[in-house]
Length: 187
Image 1 (cartoon, rainbow, N blue to C red):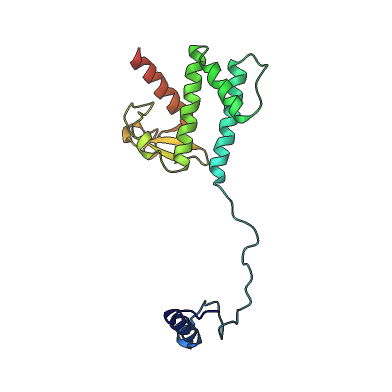
Image 2 (image 1 turned 135 degrees about the horizontal axis):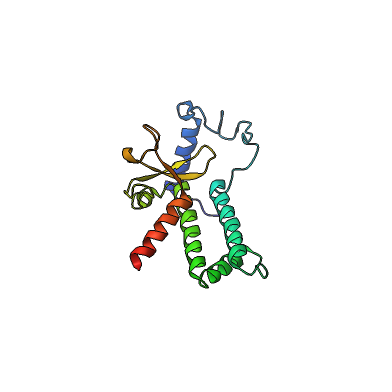
């Protein structure tokens, strides 16, 4: 059997020398004393961490319920498929059948997209480019209601309900106003 090169032996010897020096043993080190002594270690957690953001998952469940309600309103009531992807595809097909269904579907999607963007903190620039349904200024910011639902608040003082009480709109109202204005401008 061959001997390791001299440089490797020197590095190994240096590592053992450092381990033996008490100066390098600091608080939190895995070795208490000596090269092979390990402390008694136990896990401090009692349960595993959550693998994903539950508020985003709740939004996905809300969208599923909203799409099922949409298919009941605009579909024939029978033949609603099972499964998230199938219901979403069925709702998209129903939205192409009439103007009322198309507008309702666009409002539903916009409101849920805004709620998702607000949840992950990505909607500040989007809401700022949508006009307030009351005063028609670009002054909306995302807020949460006391019930925990996302809403849009107008920052214009003259639009306030009372002094110091800003006007707050559910995201569905903002989406309805935006889609209606978009369709009127397109016509």
